[in-house]
Amino acid sequence: MMPRRTYVWSALALATLLFFGVNIFANNFFTDTRLDLTQSGQYTLSDGTRAVIAKLPEPVTLRFYFSKKNAAQYPVTAAYAKRVRDLLGTYASLSRGKIVLEDVAPEAFTPEEDMANAAGIRAAATPTGESVYFGLEGSNSIDGKQVIPYFAVEREPYLEYDLTSLVYQLSHPEKRKLAILSSLPLAGTPEAQGQPLATYAQLQRDYAVTMLAPDFLTIPPVDVLLIAHPQNVSEAQIQQIRSYTARGGKAVIFLDPLSELARQSAPQGTPPFSDLAPLLKDWGVSYTPQMVVLDRALAQRVQAGPESRQASVSFPLWIHLTAENFAPRDPVTANLQGLNLASVGSLSPAAGARTHFEPLISSSTQASLFAGRLVMAMRDPGELMSQVKPTGKPFTIAARITGANLNVVLVADSDVFDDRFWLRPGSPPQAFADNANLILNAVENLSGSNDLSSLRTRGPTDRPFTRVRAMQAQADLKFRETLDGLEAKLTAAQQEIAQLQQGGRGGNATSLSPEQQARIDAARREIAVTRIQLRDTQRQLSGDIDRLGTFLAFLNILAMPLLVAAFAIVFGVMRRGRARHAPLRKVEAS
Image 1 (cartoon, rainbow, N blue to C red):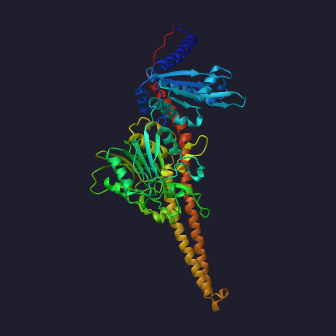
Image 2 (image 1 turned 120 degrees about the vertical axis):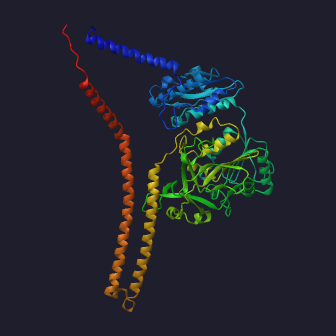
């Protein structure tokens, strides 16, 4: 019989060999297999990437530049570089020889450093004065070239999109053609100091863009026509757009009942809304350009005014939409995670329409329409919240209209272009909503390619606590009702006090009768009680949200360890029970 010590050491040695054997086997035979538990599949190659790689018409060469020696003392950069290299290796293995991957390690005063500089790879300086190169150069057989000068850690969530986009551009060197008609300040707002809006800059990088003049007479041959908040469109121009779409031309159109972006640069007296009524009538679409959607459930939280008792309030004119509000099967919206829109309109199929109306983006059922001219005069969030009269049915904000030779995407909002609603300034800027992705997806889909759409929306977006937001909106309404009641009581009490004081003996406020003084005291007590009720409402709101936050913290911090401990206890009890009921065996002496 094997001694116990020998048995233990043999088991440990066997376990060690098994551990290394399984890892070697997995690295060689399951290089593309990963367990990805992120909600958006952040570490799983998308179908779009696989499609781009599978459709490569000819080989492309990718040169990965990384100064491994100089970056060894920077763990974050080194770890990110390993992920980039592993992902590039996966691309190469999936391509069946179409992607040639080369590693270059630039060091100071070497030919590899000269190669990196010639390729346009940007070096990052370290505190010790050394340079770290961390970039990618791609080339094809016809002198096409694409470069990622430096892999910024901040763009790690967009890594797959950046790599696949580079490969896609190399395999499609000829840019598709895009014509744009717009009255929006796409080239830049005064606040942006002449910098173009981020989405417009991205369109210029990805497409051969032609800007149509306000007085255009013809639409050149293009793959897609983009119209954003059109103003003063003549009948002749309407006819040009009608002829373009009737011939099978694709168009994505952004209308707006109240464009806040356009108001930043529009001349005084310019209407804030846009419309293409003759075309919408032809396409069987009903749209009222003077009506905006107010949504109680999707209202964004905004900073309250200095006179408010709240730090932030719900603003139903600005809405945040999530996956529940998007068409799940249309490539334009299927992968969107969140949108921030402002003063949107409503679209619906007209009676007797001969076209197919497919909603792409919808409001919640806690929404209603409100006149845009009244919104401009009533910007107080609390007042707007009190004006929401839920219809119980969602309003369509964006739709795809199809028919004979017709394929148009309509969006009843143009503030989706505004950087303020989706982009956080920085170097590089950080996206917190999918506004740009909606526009880019629509243009890409209509131009005939969907491969990049599933990648573009895999970056992080703000994911608000929907339950907390609903609680805040409900409390805002209660707060508004209490505030309105307070103001009414204050006004009535002040008027009563003024009347009583004026009615004093001889008109002298100091010679009030005991009855009049008692009524004044009662009115003042009523004001004090109402103010206490107002504070209690706010305290109750804060208490409910704090309790929810405590519960969520408990789930995140303590629930999992407690579950593991409970499992261990149950497992131990079960083992002990089995041991207790196991039959006894006779042990014979040797």
